[in-house]
Image (cartoon, rainbow, N blue to C red; front, side, top):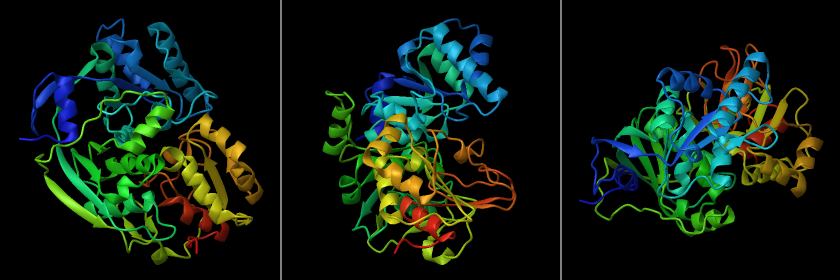
Amino acid sequence: MGMTIAEKILADKGGRASVSPGDLLFANVDRILGTDVTCSLSIQVFNEMGATKVHDPDKLVLVNDHFVPAKDIKAAQLSKNMREFAAAQGVENYFEVGRSGICHAILPDKGFVEPGFLIVGADSHTCTHGAIGALATGIGSTDMSAAWALGELWFRVPETIRIEITGTLQPFVGPKDIIIHIIGKLGVEGALYKVLEFHGPVIDSMSMDGRFTISNMAIEAGAKSGIMAADDITLDYLRSVGIDRPQPFDSDPDAVYSDTITFDISQLKPQVAKPYLPSNAVDAESVIGTHLDQVVIGSCTNGRMEDFQMAANVLGDRSVHPHTRLLIIPSSQDIYLELINSGLASIFVKAGATITPPTCGPCIGGHMGVLAENEVGLYTTNRNFVGRNGHPDSKVYLSGPAVAAASAVAGEICLPD
């Protein structure tokens, strides 16, 4: 019997000829991601279990990104704890403020992700890296401490749902609209502990920026990971980050899927996810006129150059509505520099936007753009749970960059055209 991409990776890392859904195994991990908000607990558990040295310092990637620059004393202490741990353990892959970015952009762009890798991270959106053909999944801080000590973790082999995306995109419809639509159809638990394996001509022609967006939000349907087979677009990207000889896996023709679902997006319109779930997907036109206090374009989900170019194309020489705040969040320092060198930063600043350092702050309601009571936001981030982005009575809608840029100008949700 054939295997899926995820099954092949787990078999390879577990030293087995084959695996099937439901099998339990220990598997060697290739990368272990930690951030400022997750490492302190892991360090505590690591010490409590009697560990003194991490199994392999080169497997660890530690990134300051959630509460940065430090918003208060507690946030500063979290970063200090991780900084001192990295130094004590000889972890060279430590990314400091000013030389960093959001973890899910840093890992692939710095060459830490390859097809066929098994990647774990104490952040649920670690599934982003499946866009490169890796099996990447979020874990808890306690599991991360075990992975640090052992270099491996136990896994239950997940089932895989095959997602076929066909059709031709309409104007102003992009990867974010596609994944919001898919999550809306699957529901927040529709892929619980399963892998979403994305295929089809729409994926085949999609840039890496778009693929990262789709894989990033697989967790919003409950998925263990969102994975794509590496192709020429992937290999070109990998060469650009210094990876010349990847070893990708692809699913066998006779691989067994728990389900195969086809989405024809030819008639798909710009999408919005209403509060308080990413699965509350509707056509954006159905919520036109919704007042907005704040718009956020960026984050690990839509903080790459393709996203900002789309937003800038919509903005043109227009200005942000006087009653609305627009935040632009590049996902890394490198992308921040590209914004400046490309002239896009000038467009955003002239429009009245604020460009923040790379940070998860507004996305998690922790820093640099927290919503007040009864305020309403439209974000290109990945979650809009109750209270996630600020006050429990605030509301956040999710959209793609084009709708977000147009809505920032209008001061209410509107369509780019």
